[in-house]
Figure 1 (cartoon, one colour):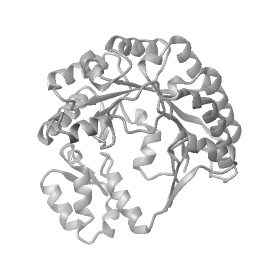
Figure 2 (spheres, helix red, strand yellow):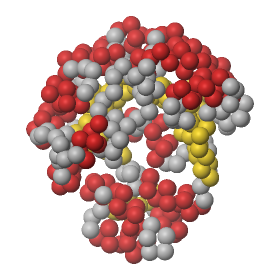
Figure 3 (cartoon, one colour):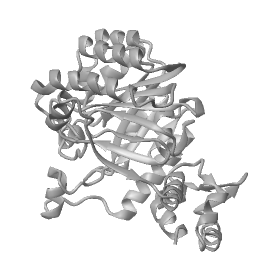
Figure 4 (cartoon, rainbow, N blue to C red):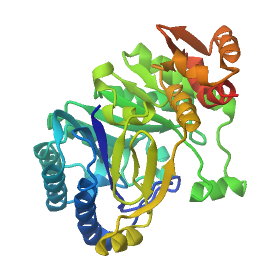
Length: 371
């Protein structure tokens, strides 16, 4: 089985007030981070991870901030130390206001064949509320430039269930984005992390988010609309124009496949052991400058934990999970029958698959099936 490789770029020019990802606004650390990453690549290669890799994903943070010189050095090191398949999927996350014809040409030259564009909305008021650096016009221009540059696998990130957002506004954004015929869409409901400025506002009662029923309605509307436009709703938040455009890298997470993570806060999983790097850029750089791996936590999963994760992750996808996985949970067959009768799950070709309504409550289904 081919592995996935993830590289975390921890820098942003500004921090969105809902964001809980590991990111750093101090770009002065970029040179030290680059050197530390190159050191980590060499250290990890010595650990003899099975190869080749068939996916490479540069996430963040904001990978599109990186200069051609920095990106070129990273790609050169990765290709010098690791083996990749000839059909490797290489994804780079980008902010619309970073996109230029010159950068697009550079990314393609380096081998990037899948661009994930963080549009979030095509409504200026929503973008201002989210604290994004770009406006709707910049987002549209980035989409146009990506197509003009010959990007043949374009993924667009969007966000919904925002305070005050109407269904009509959300559908208008979807229709506008579909004009660019993206191969992939990631549609995320706004979630609240306690330690973010958004979380603190909600905790103080200064902001009211859409209720569960409204979120459910928007989720179902999104799924129904995009499937009517030819997209497959293959994972809770993800849609693609056919299986060939499913995110091969992210599918590894949902299918419990092995992956290697590099950079601050990056996680790795070998099928049994999960480990993760220190989150802070400074600590990451200090560890590697001392010749030490930046790992800050290790978890060895028991068989029961692996079964539970396989259940929870499988129910996030329309592909579901093998029926035999339920053999590890004593009450599962009884609960399965009830959920099938309720139209939340279905059994087909030896697999348990969530329906559209089932995806709405996937986490609850996993909890109840596991007993």
